[in-house]
Length: 81
Image 1: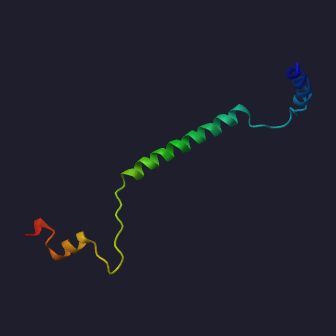
Image 2: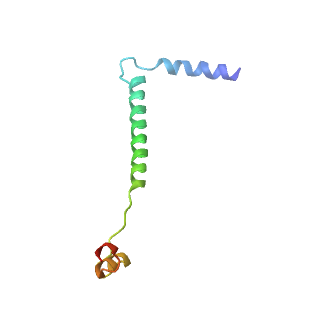
């Protein structure tokens, strides 16, 4: 009985909605949901592409990596001989 009593108190509140007021409605929700799904798919694609990137940071000035030092001396490149 308490649920029906609560509903009888809420029904007058639902009638107070102004019919002249503009609301986004179902179309607004569908557009917002489509944008959210699109952003999610773009982020998923970006993460996949960023995972494929093989990034090796260049050494700071004055420091050389072992690969760069071997290439500079000519000992690390078998095709130079």
